[in-house]
Length: 470
Image (cartoon, rainbow, N blue to C red; front, side, top):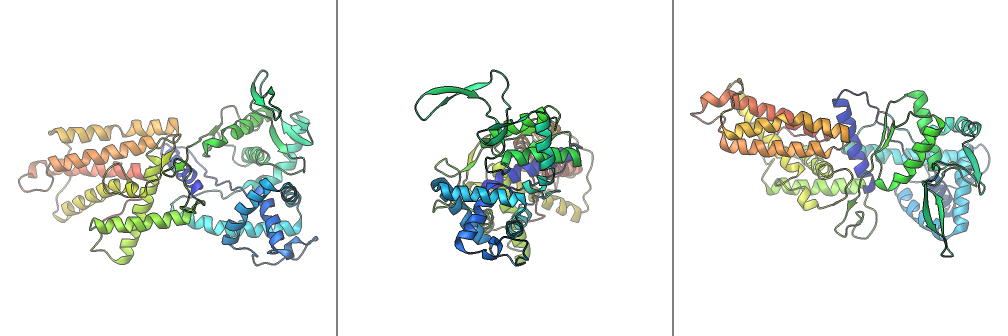
């Protein structure tokens, strides 16, 4: 859904920035496919009679065709999650189903595989539309093979202790406490951060368990120097718990785990973006909606009128994705922002479409120059607009270095916008191909080409593709 937009866009940009700086980078999706949400879906399917064949005990065989569609999962999960909050008996059954799935119950495993396959089809489509790629399509379940070894290791190191039937790792240091108000109104001091819950009282693995096991699995298979977690800022305490437990267990070197939290994309009410009906907007619907608006904007500006329908559609898609990505990445990662489709898709102001238009404008200029056999020459700075553009281009390395060091793609977005603005002023003040300016033509063509190269490089680092024409 739309809540996954920011992690996808920011993570893709950071991956590109780190690779651009020369690092070997592995992008891992890490899908949530092994926790309580799976137990909720299994229980909901059973209650609705959608998957009776999979509810049976024994080793099967079980149907090869999925008993549920993506629409079924999208409907069932929020219903089940809400019911679990209101109905303790349903919640307990879902927890038991989660534990049985993780323990290897054959019918549940077969049904779960259908959940994963159906979801993967939609995820592949959405990520492809956003031009977001992963080297690993792993999920929480991929850490399951090391789970038993990890639990034994934590016990051997005296890190795993029992707490009200569950098993936890205490991660707070001596003296690290916070005040907690109890139901009776009294206030007590409790450890801060709280202990990491590893095994629930029902015997199932939790988010913290799979996250910790994933670190151990990556240590064995990849041995990374650094792991960046691009996840909502609201998960900060969870990652503090996981990281501390990992350091205590020796699964990662100190300071090698970083949670790169981010704010939310909000609606006009300042709350996380919803549909008009108040539901969660699907990412596919957001992309479709933005593409429709991009078509409308192109037609309003009379752009692409001489293109074929297929070419126009390709450009509309690039404009739409550019609008979404730049709207997100032009904000500091740690801040929230308000979704405004009209503003984001405008060809004026600080928007993705404006930057794409400037890039296409330079490409058009360079094509005309090639048609006239005009050659690029040595760049000679004479006019103020030329100097301003050259100095803007000179700031590229600093922008990329700062974005890399601070894990902040918006610094590159800011630079790209400054380049587009500087070129626009240069283009208006310094004729390039006009008659009577032959003496400066080669220099200005070279400066224009440099501006295009840098603008496209910056946009590529943001995950934005530029069209050849509009």
